[in-house]
Image (cartoon, rainbow, N blue to C red; front, side, top):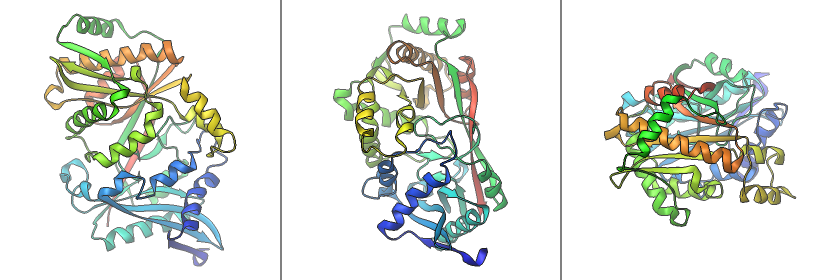
Length: 384
């Protein structure tokens, strides 16, 4: 078999189409895999449409056996990640691979080896993956939670991949957790008391974002985010080109009452972003907006009714972290968004994450509101 397997770089438009299409074929029998819109995937790997490429480069590879595509992978280098402190996970010599899909272990092993070879050629001495493509997009391999569909902007992978990656010599370096909870239930009395005390504090304002001032609000959130997350494992600052592109993609599912900014003495110091689970709307479309998918999606976007809301990002400025004020602001934002999610959008379930497995502050908040871990994503590393 091995002599028939070829790994080749993606070079043509036909190659890029094959790269995209392969995931749909590999995962077609998994009832919990949500086919992404093909146009979104194409935009992710297009340097003209993904702001991440303003500070990164990538090489895509395809595996082929007897004329049939059997796998794919990306190898990439993020120049900003190279400047981060090594003790935070990345730093000098850190290269990445991701977007792995394969029909069999032989194809997966050969693809990973090809990605490692490309990284070595570019001076990298560590391979970290899977990260597809940015740490802010779909990091990690799903190792728990295969029995239910992912929420918007979260990955879903075949269970076999874990063994295949570990057999290639990789060891786990970090876990990312997501938590789920029943948001139709009121929070425990302790949380309700904390929220009530915050509402009596004239220094605190929890406001909705103003979508008519989208760029201004995005700049406020970006500033808080890059400060709040700067000491976290795997942190790479989000850049303006990335924010611009993400803003274009997410603006249709940005609803003012689901994104909150907390102000203390008039200064923005925390935020919480919540998104209706777009995957519930796109799952039936099988990756295509045509012939009628676009009309269905537009109708849904006008006033989504969803089962699940996802909280992809929260942040509190560093100077307040580990303080009672930080917890109070977080609980207030969570409670206000919980109410809106249930009352206006019919949601019953919430998902928070991903959360780093060593982020004790966020884990404590998740546990205090009676949520439980429902999915675990694992990031691996190997010396080259």
